[in-house]
View (spheres, rainbow, N blue to C red):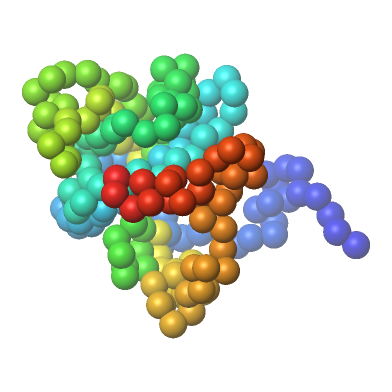
Length: 197
């Protein structure tokens, strides 16, 4: 019979108390190894929370996706996308953000919790030029806590093992998913456009 955990005491009774590295690896500033990992990351996941709930969005660029300004500050460019602005709206309502940085073929990740503000500055936006286009805005993120997460999830999931990848044709494309909401939707045109962003 299943039980629902409803209190912190019940939760802590189920799991052992962390000690050693799981505790000491969390700091409130970006040290040299954390900086090196973040600056090598071409992909991160940004989590925000606002009046309409939680949003979790992927962000990707070439290596150097973000810029580490100092031990407390990360700059993350925002580019033209689908214009839903879910994360950006949330940041205006609630500045708290979470980030997970990934590096291809690396099992570790860097986790960041902090506070973001949206900056629009022509010179700063232009410094994040991609394919001749500047960023529309830049998130300035102040780090409150940061730590690395070990490789267990990647080892278990075999995420970086190409021999375990499913046949891409067995999954719906973005265009095919869009077609489910609009009969007139041009699947081929949309999927082709996504190959050159």
